[in-house]
Length: 275
Image (cartoon, rainbow, N blue to C red):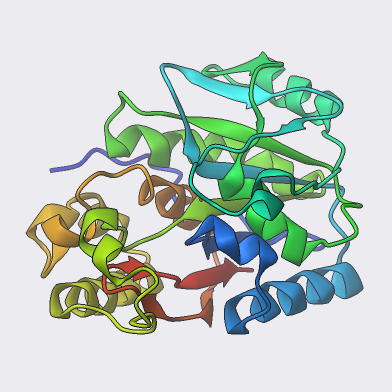
């Protein structure tokens, strides 16, 4: 039996509240791509800029794993090329967004668990999607790390310490992949077998998508027993950002899927918005 925070989904929805997004970021090559996924990101960004321009965007990326939880507090975060074997154009890609050191320090000062640091920057879980969401790099961006030694319940609890940022004009973005089995997908990279999912990936994507709509966090924490769960989430690094995003839903808010695709057999590009 999981012990979940009593305040989960109990926060009231208020006017001018920034949305929460979860994005399945997939391959770093999406930074250079013009495809249905990146076009969807571009439209998502345009819509929020037209309706309620965020003061900043806070990213919880699958690619910043730490002991302890940290918030990146540099005024100009560096771009981190945390991958290898890709074309030079990707290794030299620039996304010159400013950070929001003031908001990062404010978060750390109001949290029992989050500590400010000038280490890290924007990894590819952040900049490869931000470059399509906000191509002008005109929205400050900063990251919160994932304490990888903690149980999944910890991350659901910690999400509540981020709630107040939404009222301060900060859009919160979880970046990972709900289904992420890179080993099972590697054989399909570059062979033309892109838009498909193995049976176990389809089963888990279907199961998890319904649990997300139901906001059934307890079931999602115990994903191992779900159909295709162990194959789809061999490690939880890309799964955890989804839990942060869902745990930030407030009373009266709904989950809306904005994109849905399985690629390379074992990667889900599913994205959702909470507002």
